[in-house]
Image 1: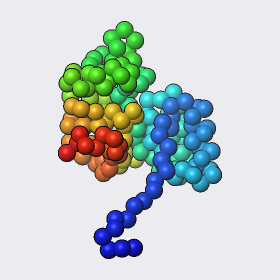
Image 2 (image 1 turned 135 degrees about the vertical axis):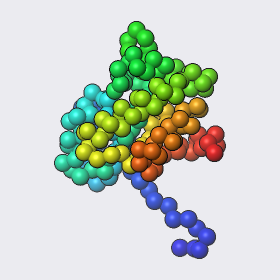
Image 3 (image 1 turned 90 degrees about the vertical axis):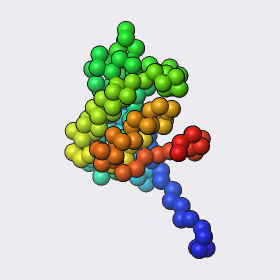
Length: 172
């Protein structure tokens, strides 16, 4: 390898483990075939409990797939009002989440509370703390969000996260 060349590593990670049984089935098939060696777990997903169990039985490397935009939160909706629809109690959806993020309308306390709840749920399901966190629909790098999450993730012992190339110019 040339002296000035950086070593690159290809990581085949499956996002959305725990979203639903059908998606999990496809992910576990890829694991068994040797295509996927790690997965990001949606701890509030419909099948997160069974997905975590099976992943652990396969010694699959797991990380937290932080969800702040889709479906039901882990926290009680009344404790995270800026992240949820007041009628349904579910997250706002991808477009509404990003619009509120860009306008600075997501309250840092709500972001911290839901992130803490998901980190705690990951610990409960996986019997170890999350060391890598990435975001469902890239929520972790949304404007006015990553500034809140970085210190929290560092405090909780998270070592790495994923920064999408398309969004990296907006980050320091």
